[in-house]
Length: 244
Image (cartoon, rainbow, N blue to C red; front, side):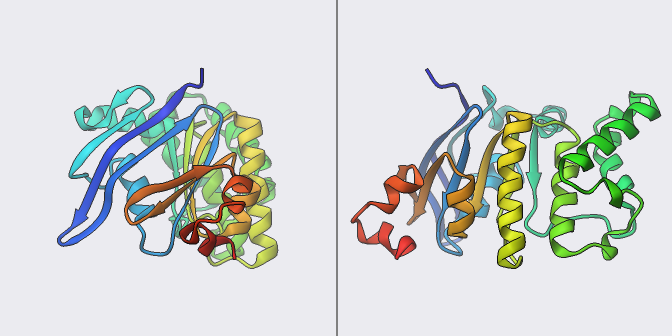
């Protein structure tokens, strides 16, 4: 039997009269890359911000690694956010910090600073090597290309060795070649770290490359659920809109 690491039931979230999520349901299984596909403004980013506690939701439940997130205090959230990594769409690197300092920041925040300096340095270099950018360790974000900044942002997430990774539009703003490189890197991360991931995207190539399964977020609900090929074979007009 598959082990769920995220269970979402009857999730509702509104902003005034804008009902973004309406009894949305979803499971993420251990070791799985799950893509959430939807149009711009459909609520994809709202969904993962609810999962990680950046947004409060109106009704329903989210069980994250076996725990009800509505019962978390600040200390419990700090612990959980070490186990769940979040790759922001904007990368959110600190422009005034070197690549090394950007990767050190979450380690110090989550008290991995108790490690010896040489252990921290080794972990940083290993993580950068896993995204193919060990040579950038002393560079500033402004010196990096868009694709390189995306890789460094992913490295900063991976340095905590999370069990779950939430990707918010990981290929947005990238050229097709770089977007494919990032998509293949997401697959490589899954293999190397045995991570479970939710990938929010409307990039069909990214979803095709990275996903084991796809959930379609339409009208605030889980409208369809299956592999990329299964959904691509659907004759439902709302599903076909994404593939034609």
